[in-house]
Length: 346
Image 1 (cartoon, rainbow, N blue to C red):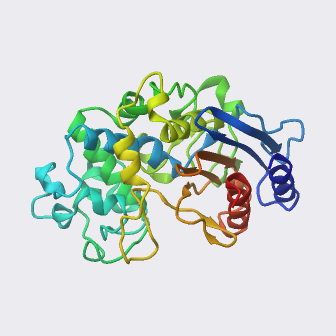
Image 2 (image 1 turned 30 degrees about the vertical axis):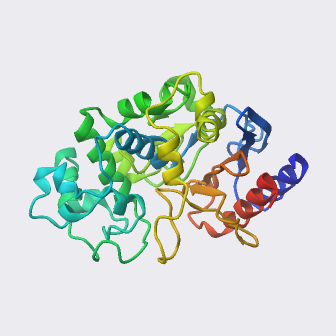
């Protein structure tokens, strides 16, 4: 497996799919295999990818913050996934989002608008942006269409903050990061000397330099802390998170969510609708189709990815900074499919 993965990633580096990558595959006992290929920045050949490289996780933020936090609130009885959001946020009364449920949002069937420029729509005041997100009209009726949107995580992040009185970064530490010793995981921008070990992403037109330690996502930059993006982390921290999903009873200190939430999330929740979704997780695409729906995945726009299979007792992480080269996600899709096949012996 290690040789096949290293060859796959070396080819991807050589063909400019991404500047570099860090990966790990593990089981309930920890990391089984790992490696790093390529460079942090192709213009600096003396700066290789390393196991402690910090990556802008992009949408993996949704899993390590909102998914963990909502799972905690569900397990302790604070949040019922099937109750309308207006029961928890009374100020939604009279707005389209009032009848939407957390279940709709977690399965991307809520009908909320697709990705949009929050600054252009609502300005730069955080309260005004939050109000705009919560009061926006739906694009279609809930439960009709599966359509991935960052708005789902933004809304659920606000719900979690309102219900707990904690900012999402504080809630994430309390629900998951501290218990799992995810000591390198934090919301950006990254401070001080740690910036040097961040993988640079896209070119910032205002400065003429690639973003490094600053979230690529405009919502994360605007809001500072939000549910859709903005977290930075390392492969070991994500491995610890995924390892817990496989063996929650082995954790020396349990996070806020546990086996019930994991089981509920890693199964198809969208019925006959396509594409199939669990709760913020989706069946992993592979070269031969979906891997038996027992391997679940989540991907990030910057080039990050993670997978988990309870039945196979295995997890995997692939972190890249493909956004350094392009916003086109097609080149990395084949790499992810092949990596999943090697990692899970599909």
